[in-house]
Image (cartoon, rainbow, N blue to C red; front, side, top):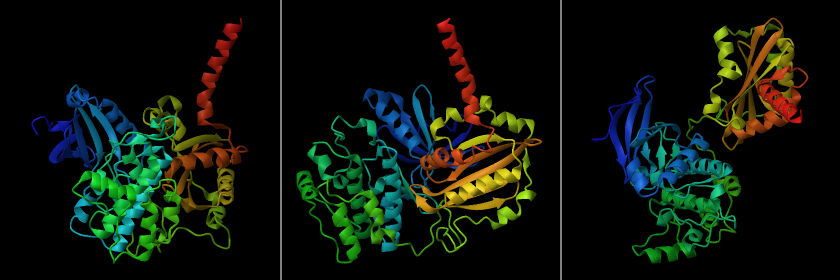
Length: 455
């Protein structure tokens, strides 16, 4: 406590100690400006440097910035002084899932909910080339709504960590949850090793105890290597079958994430309504297509000529211009969530074109006030249902700017649709895309340099 600042960077008021380890302490904190509760992880630089763990710290930061998902603990920012590193993270008010399991086994529906959330989060990590390698209930936190938050990426690995054989070779993790191929030290597939750990977690949630346990470490490893475990008699037959496929000691025949998601037990909907970020209708189901087609456009088409557009003042235009766009400091431009284009076509034509593309992509469309359109997919992706917002701004008479942004779902999925479908589909009405405008000065400069070299 003696090294704990009371106020950090004039923004965070540091409170009680939440937990501590060898190199770090985690405190509850409050953002003085927004009143948001956060958790701040304080790392001692000297201790980390002394034992050579600085690369691990850098990797953890890189990974947490890469895996933004509703069921993964979010890293807001990283601060540093000469002696300390501070992670400002999402505060998981519900504590560890381990605390809940330590009181006894969970009901089947509750266990399924957490397993579904865990699989969705870990599958998303794998899609980004990230392998957690230490999945266990102690690293699974709960937010105020009792939804899962995967945490502690200190032992995680990136895809580029693989050797020439395409496998990972660092032995790490918690013995009771580690896959047999990790113990064998002959190289392992990070995704398949994570799947095994998820299976151990599922067993623990439903049973209240570990599938593999022995006071002798070598005997424990022997049991894991042969997958010697027995399901309690209260386990449903569907769960038994699923666990036998997940806890398969042969990684080559072990079930994949896609097949886990397709299993009958996993796909059962929860009776209790979950509060999640995905779009749902009043009955809790994803939007369905009807006989009139996938895109509900009747109300939009009837009001196209009555669109009242947002007008931008000088400050709005400055903030949207390339020279003042600060987003590049925080995210890779290839993964930007928004894209803007200018058009000289009437607003009604722009709306018609956007709706036409939505129909082709089988997106549900909804019009709101102020020249605002919302498009939503009918199927759930890796990160929930894809949702795209389009807002039309009148910059001058007969000159409009349209901003399209991803409001929910997977950024890579959004970028793919934008590149392959939306941008080509809009080419008849687009005067210029903002990113093309930004590239023009660079291209001119390159051309001038070439001309100078040739002369």
